[in-house]
Image (cartoon, rainbow, N blue to C red; front, side):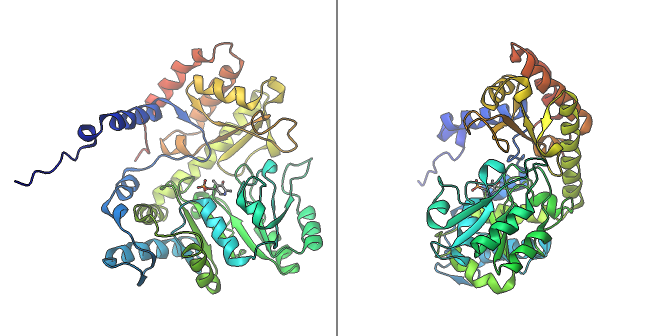
Length: 414
Ligand SMILES: *Cc1c(COP(=O)(O)O)cnc(C)c1O
């Protein structure tokens, strides 16, 4: 008799099943202000864990190195078509395993080792994959970095142009992971044109806001645009590259065989789902609330005397200078976790501290907006943050934070 093994996770592996349950419980009981996180929806998780996760299909739709790919081809083409339509792009590649892989492939497509590149420095809001010495990108290419102005803490376009004229980069990169303001993509495009450089916009954090029309789109201005699908796009972990149609072949070859092998089809399937949802009214409403919540959180924190880097926010992110509180970011993030509020320590521009002991905290409002919280809850959360950062015992704040979390439940409200 052919007896199948039990296929229930709880029966096969109670240890992992317990951890999954504990993680779900942790999410439900905390308020998540980690700017890079979102609440995975049931359709995204179902696609991620579907049989497509088991498919090996090197290559691209219609040009595979394995057989049995007719449905994989269709699901990848669906994701590609949805990405192109959503952002009005000439080409899309949905295979990057992550945002960093997406950037690596764009560099591989447009540059040779040793070429000059100009990007926003990490300490002023950029990203490791924009040429930080700790990243392979900093070892392979010759990165120069621009920063923000000391007075406004917004990107110094005069410095961008000066450095571009001096270093004649082949590629200019903008976008970042802790930059709370909108970026003038047209100004970047003009500087790139002046020095005959290509322009890459890394909109990893803000792609959902761009898709919903809450922020201006870089797509009309850039040669290539990369983003991650798990931040404001509300989808699975992974990356996407958009480009002009003429770069299609170079970009595709830079992903496979250039920097990746067989793509993760569970993720491609889940990307197709998230890109489909991103065209809906419900998604646009969520993105509108994400931004309204960030503004409300920023206003309320400023009311408690917190200094906002750049004076405020245009997106889902609030960067706070903690120095007036006499506490560093590493200590503050632990105090807030004790109070069931999650965020991360972050350097601020011209930070006298270090990445491990920086002067700031970064908050994001994606998860609360997805759970149905609005500006009044953000005001309530700011009060809890203020209390937890003052209290000798931040655990005293925890019951109020847990009660607020419980009122809205876990996962996206719909
Ligand atoms: C998050 C982020 C990435 C990297 O994404 P991973 O998925 O961690 O590889 C790249 N660029 C920027 C600006 C980001 O914020």
